Image (cartoon, rainbow, N blue to C red; front, side):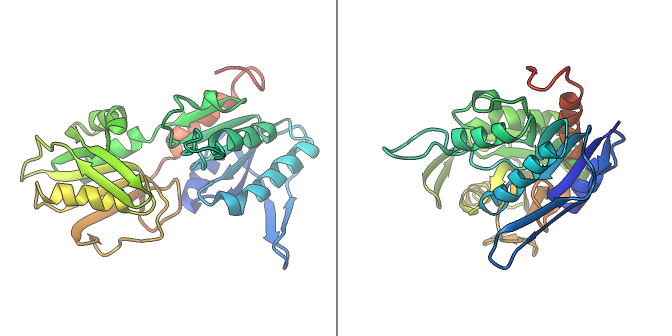
Length: 303
């Protein structure tokens, strides 16, 4: 019997790709707001005796968390045998330690909340720094799917003579994997962040020649400060029109006119977060994670 997927918040094309999988059936869910802002939620599809998957991008977590937890609790109360979460974007991972006295360590707190309500989690390229793996903060099986394959394949089929650029040293292993898929050379820059919108980029772009297309690949674009600093650095080395690719487009800017700030550049994103720039589909790595967790011997077993 197929697992039932209830879509809450996700890109429509990504939702459909997941529903096209033969081991996943579609569940009908109703959710709306009362006039006072409270959430109303109803599962129209019976879940008794079924495995349940909730699909919810957490790029606006403060707006979506209550609805998500209500759905998880409703599915369990109505007889769902297993409640899994597919969150293409996983929020609250950046604050993974207390930098100042009194700060909340949101990565641990958020992971604990989700662990209490779900039996497993699949997400994509979570923003981890001092956390080596999701197992360090989650008490449930949790898979961090990789976007390197889809991004590398997209670059290989859409970009002539690409030269990949990573924004910081932490990105080096990831950029190396993407470059392997795209069969191209790469460089990794150095980033110093002094504040939310204050970023300094240094480092060598040795190997970037005039006949190459600079392709910057970043996991998240939010304020755009890192993107602007990197494009300034690239423009000092190359006059070619750059391409900026991100997994999670959290920015409200669309960058649809072929310009990013003062630079002639294209902006492309994965469909992990709905955005006008979505061009790279990441359903395949998410589905691999779902298949792995649906097929494990029992809820709570180690991966």
